[in-house]
Length: 465
Ligand code: BG6
Image (cartoon, rainbow, N blue to C red; front, side, top):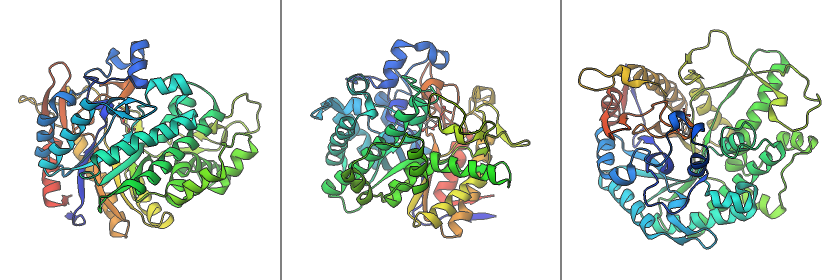
């Protein structure tokens, strides 16, 4: 059976500046560059971001490979720490400007549409040290100055813009669960940071509307949506899932698309004494500057149950997990290597949620994929990784996505994470996700079986199942 996708569908893949470029000629350090400098043992096999997949030096050859796997669109990000010399005034670094101009031109010369993101966990460490990073509204305004430079420099050729990738991961990693530097545990700060990130996004959207002259230009945000499914029909489990959805998904979805925070979430945060500080003017900016397009990163669902201990137990620090416990559903299908459940139907649920509750806004799958460790074990005698498991994973997800599109959801594309195996924060090169394998010792890059397969899908705009 053949599943036909809408005309003009974006078949692509996503990466980010800090995960692909390497630090070559980069003036400033971001929080991850700095974390690796001070604590290399926190990174898998002590591999840091210095070389990544060498994209700074090999972008031409890499883009050629991306073309060979049939991509008609690619997402990457512009590093604030590469483009800007002085963060206060947003003066430009000429080498950074030249590099991103070259990358964008090279993508276009290969008929690949650039999707450009502005923040992918890579806050300049200097702004953390001086102001507390996203805790500060001054940093929000500095981000908008950086964004303005990007829109003005590249907006003539880039039509698809995104403010943040997975802002919730900054909140969770940096302020709650200690998987991003500097591993603060502070619920009240976490809530304020979530608000400030939203404000930064909305202010960047406002700036885009002011300076954009490209008639095709549009702007959005990329959110990791993890639909939260209750463990049972028990109302207490349902209540737990409802909170998890508010916290993980709606906290950015609602203000970004609808211009307002969910009243229920605001009430809970207020009652708990952790509501963010926001002025009337800031809330008006959020209200007036909603996005044009939504990027959705989907890897796994989230299953939750009622918390074992009562939410009003004595605890020093506010934590969202007071309202739910994670639920390990017996019999679930797993990608054991990565520790993530495989549940393609969630992509259909997301498609319908966006259609029914978010005005059927244009959206696309901005990341989906399968991280596998020790993938060299699957190489055949010619050195090609025989990643049939990845092909099956993509097929299953595309099938569910297609069902959502058939039912009217306005999905305009599917991007795999990632075109070429890239460096992944503290997991470094542990899990490989790419269509193209990268030998990190030699930087030799080889298309995997999935890459050859994907070209057929993209060229024909059709999935054979
Ligand atoms: C996504 C991020 O959440 O997951 C990427 O946007 C990241 O930046 C990807 O690389 C995979 O993460 P990991 O931890 O499995 O390597």
